[in-house]
Image 1 (spheres, rainbow, N blue to C red):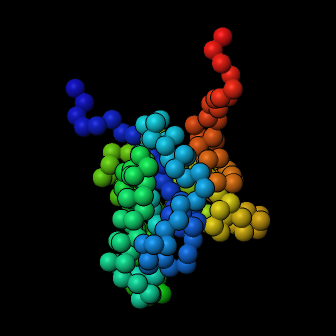
Image 2 (image 1 turned 180 degrees about the vertical axis):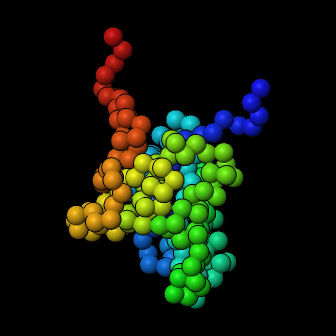
Length: 199
């Protein structure tokens, strides 16, 4: 008999500009605003048995713009908002470093440290992983662990796409937002015409 849980496919998500509005060094929980379609998209991944993991660079901590407690308050606010809508996150991991302020690290995207840590802790199947973000560095981190890269045009994504995608990993798919990610990865959602009656 095999021990332990069966590894799950995983949707890795950048946070700012991908899942929530980018507010530039967000330190106030009241500033958490989910992007349109986020809840529906995450619900579809939940229903398909995927783990959803947020991996976020938070260099504002290293820069002294806010502290770990501020980051934690924002992260808890986001987790609470999603859980209340029936789409709890499997985990949220962050990198508090910046090379100019705290030296090099293995967790700041494009390094894959956060993704690897999540995979070890949660028994994730990286061969069935997708990495979604609005910056090249997000997708490079995903590519480093074999995740399929998807660029969203929210946040900085439109600018990234308009620059021709320089530095994007091979095979990157560009979509408008998280609903389109769900359509691309899981297939289009079935739409029910409410005017249709039985028979």
